[in-house]
Length: 343
Image (cartoon, rainbow, N blue to C red; front, side, top):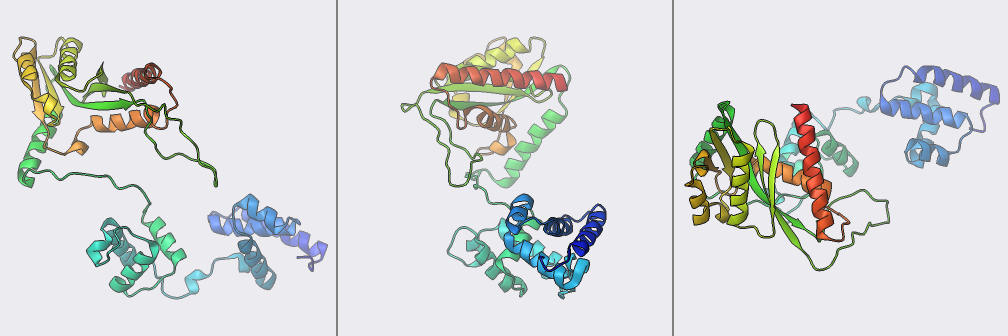
C-alpha cells in the first residue's frame, strides 16, 4: 500500500466510498470496507478486529485489489465451474443429518463434519472440504444441540392417533359453556438446573449450589382458550396435590358446565382418592381425558414448564426455598397478566 502515491490513494478511496453505498451483498461490502480502511492507512490488525474478519482475509483482499483494481473485490467463485452444493446435495445432507450414523453403517453414534463429508461422498459422489461442509450445514439450518431422551409409546400407532385426534377435536369444538385445560406437575429444586449460557472464551461461569437439595412441587392447569395457568403448591407430588388442583379448578370456573382436564397417565391421577373426588356433586363437573402413554409433546403445559425453568430455575442463585418459590409465583403472575392483556 505504501507504493501507491498519496494522490492515487485518495482517488481510489473516494471511488470505493462512492460505490460502497450501492452494495447490498454483505461479503462484497466487507471487501470494499477493508480496502477503504487500508487506503485510509489503517493496519491489517485494526481492520481485522473492527470488521470481525481474519488478517489473512485483509491481505488477500489487498493483494487482489493491487493486482486487478476494483474488479478484484468481486466474488468470482461462480466462474469456478459446476456448484458442489446443489439442491440435491443439500437435500441429501438434510436426510443424513436427521438420521443416525449407525443407519449408514458407522459405529460412531454422533455426526462429525468429516463423517458427513465421507457419507455424502458415498451417496452423491461429490467431495467437499470442511469449510464447505460448514457452509452446507448452515444453509440447511443444521445446529449442534442436545438430543431429547424419549420413550416409545407402547400403544399401537392407530390407537394412539385416534386418542390424540379425539382430544384435538374436543379442544377445537369446545362449547362456550365448557372449559378445557392441559394438566401436569413440575418439580422445583433448590439445587439449580444447569443450562447453557453465554460466557467469554477461556472463562466458565459458576453456579453456586446450596448443597442439600430441597424440593417443592406444582400441579398446574393451562386453559386452552386463554393460556391462563392455574397452580397449587405442595411438598409432595401425590394424589393429594392433584385433588387440590381439581378443587381449585372447580372454584376458578364456577359457571362452567364441564371442565375437561387433559393429562398424562401418571399414577397419582388414577387413585381411589381421585375417583372419590370425581364422584362428589362438584367433582361430576370434571372430566379427565388421558393422553397416550409417553406423549409429553402433546401436552401444551409442558412447554410452559420449560419456559418457567428457563426464566426462573435454570442457573438460579437463590439460597433458600422461600426465595425461589417467591420467584416462581412472581413469574406465573406476570405470565398470566401478559396473557390476559394479549386476549
